[in-house]
Length: 218
Image (cartoon, rainbow, N blue to C red; front, side, top):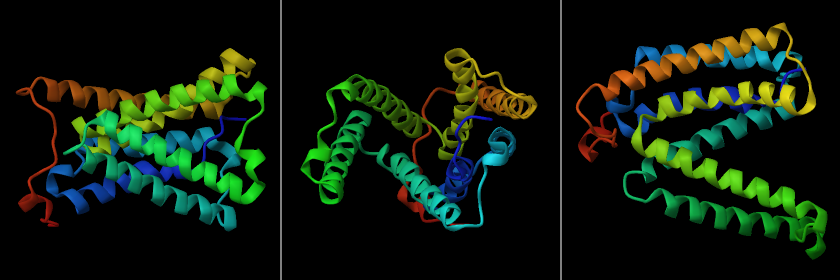
């Protein structure tokens, strides 16, 4: 079987690519290379999913709603990057997430559920460190580049899942994983090529357009 990939991981980059020009103006329209990378990445991840892709039921609808929420969060990162420092965004995100999760656990399971067992602390600390670093990096990325291009790069996640499956658990990928992973790699190369072309142009980041352009929906 392929790595655990949820349907929202397929749809979220596409929703970001569609929503960014609507919210932020024409400057956020993805280029042809980014659009091609999005398409290849989605097909590649679908191949990695294999038979585990489940739609058409209540859980599928929940996954679709999760994709919309995730896309909204990523678009908010792009907008916040105009005015806020990445460390401030990550700090408040982690703080609010911790508070809401703790309150939910206490409400559902009682106060004891909010305190993990001692044996879980190393894994929880490791997860927190990697999650924080990843959140910081993606916040910086949204601050410096188009939302669609940054979102398309997330399609590399399932490829890492296949690699770690082999390294840690000794699970060798099947034909579908090789095919899907190959497509995702090609998508990544397209994004890298477009990024290198941008670096050959005059230096500067890709900030959000001024308010007069951001209101242009045409």
